[in-house]
Image 1 (spheres, rainbow, N blue to C red):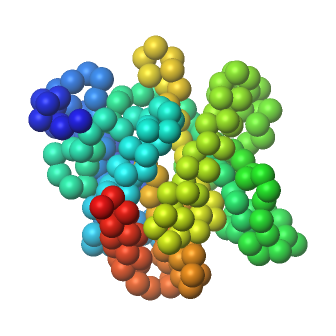
Image 2 (cartoon, protein in one colour):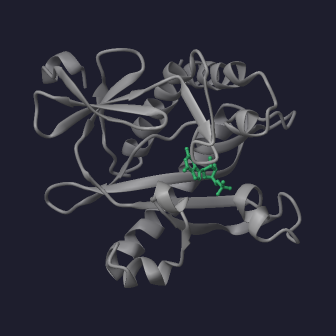
Image 3 (tube, rainbow, N blue to C red):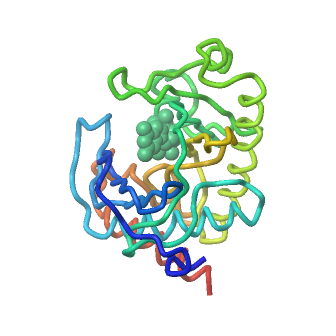
Length: 247
Ligand code: 5GP
């Protein structure tokens, strides 16, 4: 859809997150989500600005949300926003949960279970949850406690687990088509006013680990987390691959 057809106008900034800015719009049901060049790791312990990251993440996110919609995964993406870093999205009540899908063991999984061989494959994909709570460093939470704590009911938990598996398979195919190998990813969900749960936030090299399928080069935020350099180049490379995929 063309934003001009919707006639949406950006309003005031209502939230500045670690990487994204959220604006209200003149339509009650829509927000404008802008990917910034800000980058952070370790719950904000380390921050920087990477020129070109916002446009790369927004381009990649829009392409992925469009693909997921075609596959029947309901998500908040409506149309491009007022600039190349932004998109119009449906307004939801965010569910304070991060859902992580792992195809290979790395990152925080290895920190918690250091005896696990690096990059040990998970078959089927392994799902875990963390609470979305910066003050408590997004602590892991058991699926059972997600229900016990009233974050989701059992039916919703089941739906989110199934959606995350479908999203994982779609992301694996998507990144394979641009010469990448998906290692793990994080997704978030929100509730529409009628209670329907949909996929929200962004899906980008900030929220996924992706290696070059041939060389093993790191094409995601681990370049920043691990001080590997060439951060802007990796995001731009992913964006170019996604743009070429569209042709
Ligand atoms: P880990 O738990 O190993 O640090 O991360 C697993 C996957 O989820 C990685 O792809 C990572 O980028 C993503 N992830 C986990 N937590 C967050 C978060 O708070 N913010 C972002 N952007 N990604 C996260």
